[in-house]
Image (cartoon, rainbow, N blue to C red; front, side, top):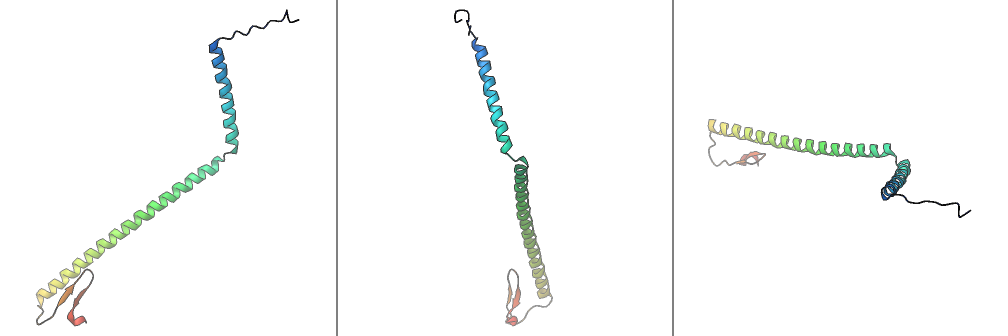
Length: 115
């Protein structure tokens, strides 16, 4: 029986490479499918959306806080300028006589009578 049975195993090198690539591709695809079974896509997407939401909220909070601070300083500066202009205008209308000292700082206008 062994005399009648002959097997010719002459496979070209290109075919061996092609078959090896196919086997590797099938193994990789199988492993990917197994890994995908364990992955919860909805959970990942929701996690990313929550992360983006928290980042956007933080950016909005920081930006709005900065804008409010800028407006407060702008209003404060405008108010101080108005107070100074009013005080100077009143001083020009009726000059202070005697030893009266006027103290004007960033947020107050005082005289020595205030103490």
